[in-house]
Amino acid sequence: MLYGGPLKHFCVPGMNCYSCPGALGACPVGALQNALTARRRRFPFYVFGYLLAAGVIAGRFICGWLCLFGLVQELLYKIPVPKIRIPEKIDRKLRYLKYAVLVVLVIGLPLFWRSPYGSGTPFFCKFLCPVGTLEGGVPLVLLNRALRPALGWLFRWKMLLLLLCVLSSMVIYRPFCKYICPLGAFYSLFQKISVVRIEVNTDACIRCGTCAGACAMNVRPDQAPNSTECIRCGECIRACPAGALSFSCAGKEILGSGKKQRKKVTVK
Amino acid sequence: MKEKQRKTGTMLVLAAALGMCIFGAVNGEAEEVFLKAVKICMECIGLG
Image (cartoon, rainbow over all chains, first blue to last red):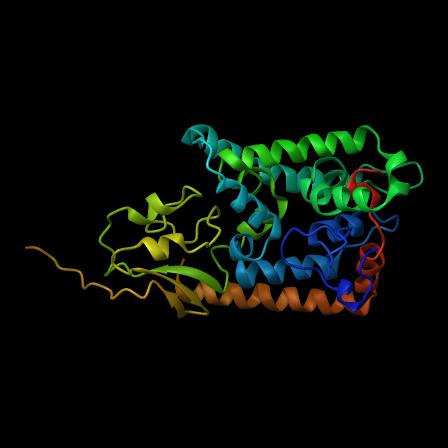
């Protein structure tokens, strides 16, 4: 039922449950937890190196452009229902939650909470990840009658979390990416040094704030173009009336708004 | 952050990342990823 070809030696950069019948690659968070829960403790060089490389090359550009679950949330947000804007104070605090998920559920507990037989439990995958439920659990249970008698409280708990995620995604922009995703949390650590980034031409910027208004992640691209919360969706680049923002790769502009940059005029 | 420092940091982290990937793959970690990814992960789908 699952693809079993050689591509599964490699992780994909975004959240992608490897139990999904359509998955061609491995999930980086799942692979990391699998390595951490092994009986024989050793540093997961392969997966950690992969995550490090993906983070330093693209940062959260992956969240904006390469994550399937991000796309699902993006599409759900397009459903025309009233939207909720979380107050800034609460929003700012909630954003730290994803770092706690990364440190506690993805790394800490799988590494240190051991069964009497010496193996750990992938806490994030098992108790929290709605991606596994959506991409793996639901299709596998629908396609495979033999799995249905095994459904218990854990499946119901994960379905509840998935439902919460789906409903909240309709009213809040990418709530899982903003508050929960441990992969986004990891990649965000490399935003400041990543190869793909957003650049501001400070001479062309007219400080009108249009970019901040266009940003659904509540970032000020003119002041912090490589903020840890920026998923590099490019909306600010498109919105900038002065053409002051652009994507750059290794210091070279690769994609601007196509607008002619204005020269800054100093009034004496 | 100065541009030169940033670029140096990027190159160092990237080199370390590629080194870790190669080291891990040589030590059979890619095979472990493969073996986990080709089977249904019961925990991931909520059955484990």
